Image (cartoon, rainbow, N blue to C red; front, side, top):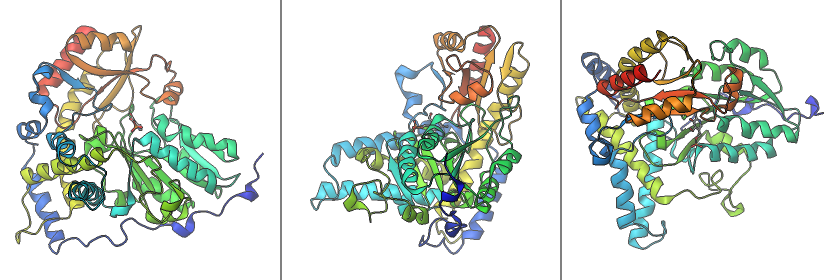
Length: 457
Ligand SMILES: Cc1ncc(COP(=O)(O)O)c(C=O)c1O
């Protein structure tokens, strides 16, 4: 049995640090822009959906005509900018990057720009962004680093609400003597209660892993407040933002977390996992890359070099967010550009507003339906449009198949939230029906979904 006395010291010496040491300062009229953005938004209640949908080739793709996409929590459509960037990379610069010959130089430049631009939109420093093949792979690598860094008796808190990518890798550290504590959902509401976290935190807690937004329950958690508690206990916060980021890029520095994870294939982009890690933590953890790269901060946690073309295509995601911002907002009076993080803060509410308008009728429909057990809250505030439910005496797979036959794509199963299914007394092999959409979803598509559900349930 592990002894608490063997515990490593807490992370207090790292905390409460911040992201972005050495980041460029925001422009002079930054505060003015904040006000201008807010004023403009007040007068503009709607996202320009015609414009938004014109940015996604899927909406004009002949083979997708008549298809309604309601499995966005699994994977969103890619915006045209990403498709174009990928094609451009393969056409013009598909060589080994970072050599001195011209196409190679250009390839490396695109990859560097991708990191810098994404970091700015997430409000972290460039070398705090790490590209991996997926979020599951990124957490796996960090778990190997923690295996070497933590000591027997150190405690790790995991939830039973998360996707397995942010649970299983930490749980496996039990084999090395680390103690796993489970922050459990309320089995009726499916929600995490912060009082339970408070009861679990103690002087041996080193890590708390939780989700910004569950891919089943949909509630958006108050990450900054929870992280403050976690830091006060001397632990680090590792947050899964995969189901959150498609609804608006987060300001990672403002959340204060130590590691933030997201998967760009659910944020209109290529199939890559993004990990923002505070540089102080990066320095503290042992290198997981090749030994000779130990001093290359962005190589230390990406032992498998991710796909170059996809990294270059991250620029397309940022091109899209830039275009959305430019279409809906104006610049400072002196024509200086607002900081990217400020643009992110302006774009996210536009997305959310559009999503909530569609979410309300869907929730209303489901709560009135006999035999439907809706998971998560019935109100739209701080709730992602990811709606899961079960139906008495019906199999989720059968419901999904019936909707598929009507040209409506939805999800079903446990969506890798296996432990949540168990906590809610839902057989994980059957799971739930999951309907998920994003800002580009139109009301007529939602009506089709509700009509389809009405016929099917
Ligand atoms: C909430 C959540 N976290 C983590 C993951 C895992 O992401 P990846 O597929 O990039 O490993 C998913 C994937 O569906 C997810 O929905």
